Image 1 (cartoon, rainbow, N blue to C red):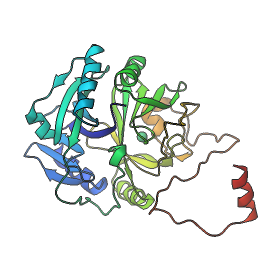
Image 2 (cartoon, rainbow, N blue to C red):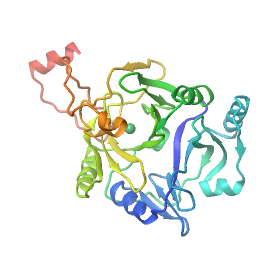
Image 3 (tube, rainbow, N blue to C red):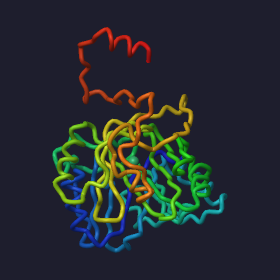
Image 4 (cartoon, protein in one colour):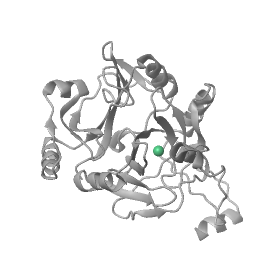
Length: 332
Ligand SMILES: [Fe+2]
């Protein structure tokens, strides 16, 4: 698969100072200086993951998709051009600006600026988070996921599937039309929602511990109108998360405990609801507006739950068991 991960995201904004405060104190990123009209933020060992640029308009954004090496980048460029997509080989100065070895740029079927790159530069100083968090879950899974609203849903989906090699994780046809796509074990690095109001709905960043999220939630609730979607757990990627408004016109989801996908066994699934296991009040309203059904939704009779998705270092297995639980887990 050519594209391996969402490597970085750039956004245009006039609110540089607001973004600095939000990205460090709320999200826990580390700010690095990039001159008077641009700020960049680290999440890990990379030189930058999020770039906010005062020289770009508010609606301008770019998404940096990572490939393995120069050969993979050439192959991707050739595939795009064969598919009728105009591809620009960006000059070395642009690669330096992005802190990558080489990049190409092109537009997706909806007109979003995409960049594909290889050989990202690693910082020579350790990551220092903007607030006290355990860290961001990145690595082979990239910086997180982006959710885009698009009008020509089928055309944009075909673009990402056929030209960039994205694979379907799951999808829903009613009451909304959406598709969740993966390029690595992260359940989705991109999701598309069919919508007349085009743009980015949210950007997601995942942390290592539930307490990072809970503390972020406390911080967000202390600021009027910052929380857009309450704490809750998604039924498809199992993420426990909340969403905040940002200085721009999209949301940021801060989450913990998402499942991984194994391509060898994964079968795309049709979802019948985007309602969460619990919580996430405001999510459906943020997608469909005031036509959203009342919250909380009526629970289905079969119940809704899934095991926590944990990793070494962020859990301890309990020793206590009882016959009732033994029977329940044995049946599952
Ligand atoms: Fe999300």
